[in-house]
Image (cartoon, rainbow, N blue to C red; front, side, top):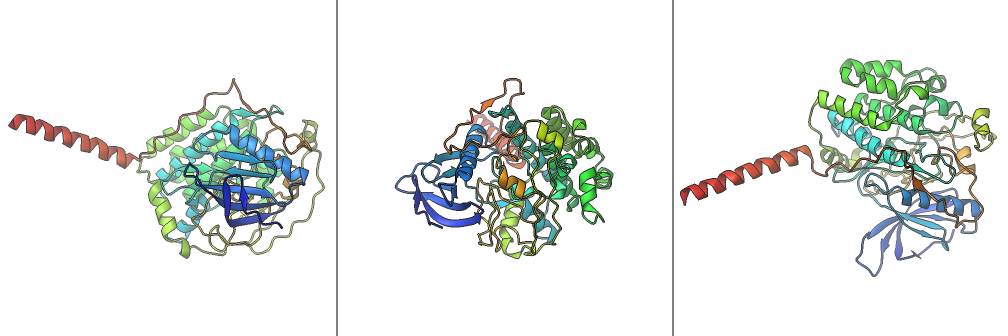
Length: 435
């Protein structure tokens, strides 16, 4: 592998991970003070590899179209070096936070869990409003806690759009996708429901199930929904709809999903503090468990119905060998890339605008390598041979407008400012009265 010293205005600082066909770097800007000073660069090992070059070009176009503070920003597509530059985020992943809570090192209450889920739903709604050249809307396709980043300020960023997934965990995979269908907006909703369940109960769907493969294909999650509903009846309706086995029974309009989550959060109440959660995770990063249970993989194939809808033909199933599951990102484990990673370590507080792969439970692997776009576009197309192709992404005029970003102030900060203003007015009134 040729070690790249500089790509465009950015100099390579360190390797974050390696994958099949690509290498992931952290890079810093040289000879300039303009932002961003740090970016993530995903670079093809072989710039002459037309398939990888086309995938990188398409990822750049998708990220460039999704201009939203809850999504990574594309900073450049470097054709000669076959590289894409994107946002670099310090902080931790939601997977780290879940592990910290399980180890008793962090607290995560239901109000913060709902608030994080609302931020993720906002990000997905914006992405789903964008359509590509093939006419299908952009979907994530492999969303999980590992691909939800939390900055030290408590901001939530969903990464992994446009990248090639190594695999999917059963818990976050909609039953129709587990049976071989292509990811859709509805399957992204399933992942949102699965993440909310895990945030509240502290365990993934199908944990302890005697046959997770069969449960994953049928969407048998009634017992987990019932557990949450017993604790918080306000969440029963939204979880039942998010985790409906039939994708047609999930939310048709995503603003209704946001309304349902907001209404449940108001009824439950509580104080939201994402900053405290991130601070606890980062403070105890060296104490998090390094080994997590191994789980068996499953490799579903595409259905005939999917192939007839202008989608890639069924793929030959390749055996997948799963070794002992690696540790969390930042704890003797590489931060994930768009392809399979090796064991290169990376510090925990390193976060990038790339696909932070959850290397624990791949469900599909070979499919994604053969078709780089299947996890990003609802109706995929075979990437053209020209690595410099353009996608003509545009906003769907019929889609509801994307919501404005939520204020960066936390409720406690807003209350403090209000009280401060009141005391200031009282002080001024007293001074004028004395005079």
